[in-house]
Length: 114
Length: 114
Image 1 (cartoon, rainbow over the protein chains, first blue to last red):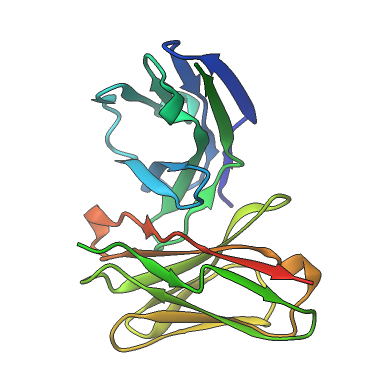
Image 2: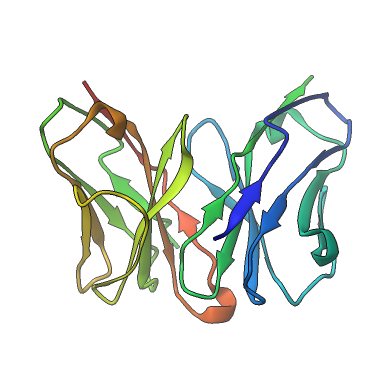
């Protein structure tokens, strides 16, 4: 069985602070895919990044960066110089090689205050 | 390119009724997956359809069913509604092609059961 844990249920920061959202996963598969999605108040899940289990390179996209560490089964997400528009619920998700079935973590609600 | 569309956006039903939700995938996408989001259970996978066939199914009772049409549009049906079925139902589409199998989500249908 697969499992994704996001231990931080809610984080509050002041604008321009850096913030890291933690994600720990469990799977027995050797091939799997990890995702981060953002859910603003409107409800739609917005895709942020996809990583496969063979690619442990960290990735940076503007103010966003992701740190994938297979040794600790973690896929953490950092927002640098946070902005009010970053306020949302962020979900980490895992998918194995059997098809389009995402297993989601419980989500982390990020509140960025001006 | 238009995104995933879902209709209706909001729905109010009473216990015992049935409901049908509709999802139109991104043009060219052939896989459609459905997810239920509730405050208590979080985001849970319902089922996935590809080429008009159900390819994967989550752990939900038989009251939850779906289908996919030849144009890849999908519907899900919930019969004999219960109060606990109140949720945001999200639809996602993907190509799929193994290395680019990212699911893109629609805005969701918020179902309230009274």
